[in-house]
Structure formats: structure tokens, C-alpha cells
Length: 292
Image 1 (spheres, rainbow, N blue to C red):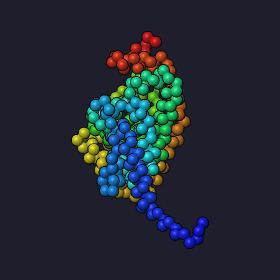
Image 2: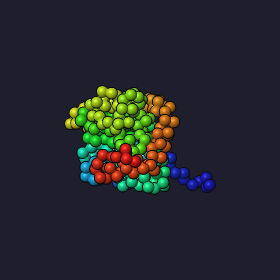
Image 3: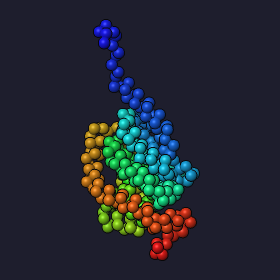
Image 4: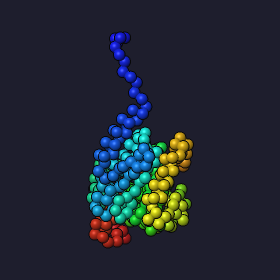
């Protein structure tokens, strides 16, 4: 190297952060099933909206399921984000899995392996993301969206929201997050009642049993969620993130429970019960498991 050659000035941390932020903004814009924007001072709160591509409810097809998994890695890499608000578009928070994708899971072993891996990554990415996440739940909340809503650090639900884990009605074990999260939030007795029977509960009831952090009138839902996110963004970031990671060790201690439930769920997609569950959904009728 020529000692007389002028050296390039060192780049500043601010410049580096701006470059990373610009690159992440381009990645956010590439998501097709999530609408992502920055809000508040310096854009420190990231607003992540699951899009209602069917005009009614956000549903997770192959692309949506993958994007809901990957977004948390991008959030964790974003130096400008101090809090996230996750919400649904249209008539509810989350409408569950797209029926075409669910049918693929009953027929295609490769699809089962891929979606199982994504379901595992979704939970672990949420648990390891240091940025605090606030969910704003309205209307129906089921499926992959509910996974993220329940694993959020602060969950705010409209009083009339309708929360349900529908796995056993579909004919598969309650995997994804349910066996991991529900017993720790609301106790084993309530968890078994709601997960075995697919018994829905309102946001008000969910708050009463400890399944969500807060229940508010629907008109107050987004203002309250944004207010919580703003407080988190204004707080001591090191302390908040360290506290989140410490508390999430409770979930991680139960990782064997999660892994078992996920394996049993995806094993079940190859069973005749799952095919009957899908047929019942498509034909809009109660499933007939007793005739199998």
C-alpha cells in the first residue's frame, strides 16, 4: 500500500445506521402481505400491518407465512426501531391459514417440512427479537397471526375480539405456539379447555384469564397500542430489551414442549382427520371425525 496515498475518512456510526436503515426500508417495501411504515419521532415505532388480501381478513398463504416469519429478523437488524406495533387490516387481526396452503400440507411432504420449519422459526425469531412488540388485536384472531399476537410483549385486544385456536377442529394437534404459550399465560385448566375444544373467547375474557395484557373498546385499540409502543420507544432501551430477553427465558425453558407439539401437529397433517377438517372448511360444514 502506498503510504502517501490519501486514506478514506472513517465512516461514522450515524452514517452506517442511515445506510442500514435505507437498506431495510427497501426490504420492508418488498413485503407483499405486510404493510410496513415508520411512525413517531425519528420513525422509532415500526407499524406492521398484516394485509387483508381477500378484502376481509389477513390470511397466511405460503408467501404470507414466510413473510410473517422473516419480518422479525429484519426488525432485529433495524438500528432505528425501538418498538413495533403489529395489527391486522380489514375485519380482524388474522384469519388463519389460507385454505390452499392447508390443503397442500395434507398432500405434500415437502410443503409440510418447509412450513413446519417456518412455524418453528416464527416462534424463535419472535422470542429472540430484542425489540419490544405490541399487538393490537381486533375481530377474529386465529392461525399464524395469533402466534405473533400472543407472543407479543404487550398484547392489547378489543373487548369484542374473537380469539380461537382452531387446530383440533382442523384435525391436527395444537402446535404453532399454543402448547407453549397458553398454559403459562392462563394456566393449564383454561389452556386445555380452549385448546381441546377450540372454544373461542372474547378479548374481554382473554384479559380476565391473563391471556392478553389489556382489553379496551375497539375505538381505543390503536391509540392505546400506539401509546404503549411510544412509551417503550421513549424508555431505557438496554433495560427494556434485557428485561424482555430475561422474561422470554420462561418460554425457552419450555422449548421441548413446543418442539413436541409442532412435530405432532405436522405429523397430523398426513392423517385422514386433517383431510376431513380441510373438507369441512371448504364445504362450510361441521367436521365429521366420528365416521373416520
